[in-house]
Amino acid sequence: MTTSGIYSLTVTYGCNEYDTSIEVTVFNPDPVDIGPPTLTMCPGDSYSISLDDQLGTFEWRDGSTGGDFTITETGLYSITMDDGCDISFLILHVFNMI
Image (cartoon, rainbow, N blue to C red; front, side, top):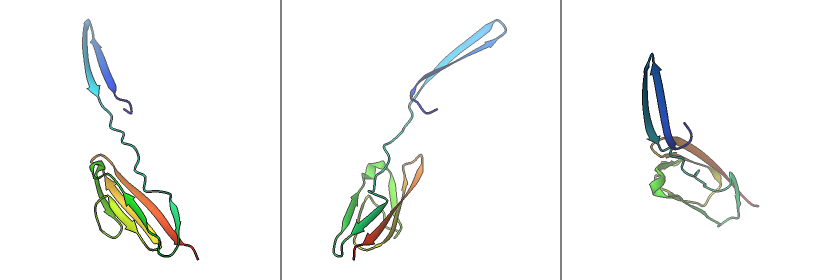
């Protein structure tokens, strides 16, 4: 199921018919946006990411947790987010301008 709504089922067995229904709510949160997949920064610049802690639990590549993270160096940054239903893995590659 990918759509919220009321779903019903009718079962017919011989002359008997049984009906039931259930209301289903599908949780589809907005995708998490940590910025562009590639970022170019000048020396001394920083790039801050602030994610809503209510979206789930976060773990950055360096082992830190929480939605706030500041990038000050070149490198490959990744975050794993667990929202209780799915686990997402996002990557950001940072380059310095020369």
